[in-house]
Image 1 (cartoon, one colour):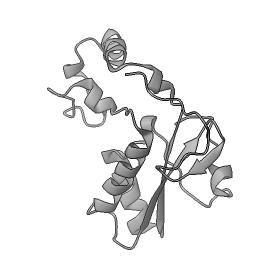
Image 2: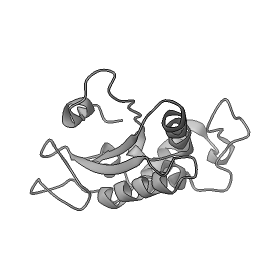
Image 3: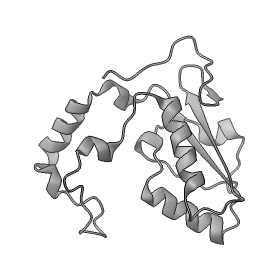
Length: 157
């Protein structure tokens, strides 16, 4: 979702080369699976690339601040409908932090998102799924676990 990440540039893409889905946290949600399933099964997409990034603005927000901020906006979070087209879908007894799904370790999160896509029954087995971390600090794309910049912004727990 971060506007600082020039996805097309770092991947060398031209207009029409790729479908790019952006969301907060770069999370593979049910809606991402839905979109990926449609494009890989019906529109000749043969590769999925997950890109997470360092220096996330949400890394500076402790879980309690997120919970309080969303609660101040919406009131009782257990009554919030997540998708207006599916009003029966709500977070129920889950903690809003589980729904927001922010992370302390962007490399671990990226690898988990890749695995989630690979394990989905809706994504064909012959689809290439890979993941990278865009280092805002260096302006470079890297594999999870590698590091290019000397210092990386980390989440304040």
